[in-house]
Length: 210
Image (cartoon, rainbow, N blue to C red; front, side, top):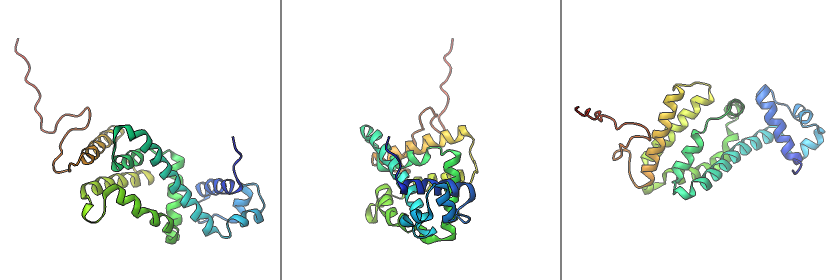
């Protein structure tokens, strides 16, 4: 297994510190100590704390894009749409460490919105792939994506508006709707139940008489 580069060690140390003490209290001296290197070695790669945090935001984005690429490869045989792929990745439960890191980055971005620039530069391409642009814009796809992002934000904040059983049902329904949209449908036209669910309003079959 290849040894991590100095840059990778610095980013790993930064992530560990941001998770522990928060971005506001992060210092270059603390990062150098955590990474077990000299401050001069750190400054060779990152001149300022802002550069370091921006690199961490980009790293976080790249991890997400890598997960999307892996999911796309898994779903290629199932002819899944870009929307389905994004939703599947975003509906995956994040562990406590990932959530804490997300909150820390959110706080850093709130303190310095310019840290978002690298994400904004790639966001348009992601969204155009998910819900289209101009005349090809699909409001139903946007609705599903925004609903899932809202659920992720609640999860990031440690708020669980749904029970595990309800979340499972919502996840199944969202993915079913995304699949229908991928087949050229719309939310207005589709009312198929999620796998394992009954059709809304469907009556129970009458019991056979003896």
